[in-house]
Image (tube, rainbow, N blue to C red; front, side, top):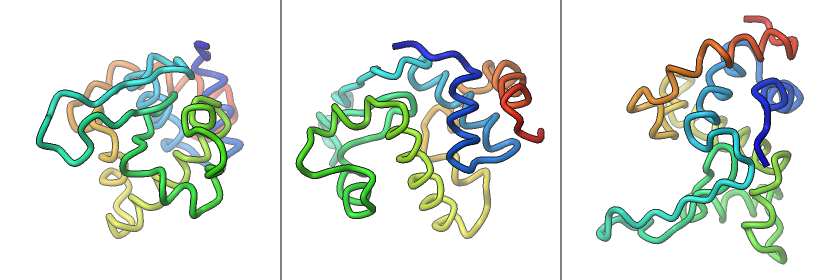
Length: 145
């Protein structure tokens, strides 16, 4: 299910993101998943990594290895349902993004740009080509940018 940049921006605004957070996270989703809510990526490129063979799910490619337990403790995920069924739902994925972003922001001692580095596309700059469209969508969704 491919979503529009505007729909993604509206979801972010409803989840409490503001201004450039909506823009940046919208661009991140586009780079991570192509705005495909059902995108899945199996991490099989580094056989030495702790997260080898783990999966990234949904719009923002939330990694099950690193985030399943904290998201379950937080009540975002339900232990009785498969993670795939939950994180492939856009509303659950954006709630997970809120938690991941807030945790990263806390770890980065409030330095917002560092919080975005939870996503590799920010480290590589792969989200940058999508910032213009994400800004337009954020404006149309009512975010003050």
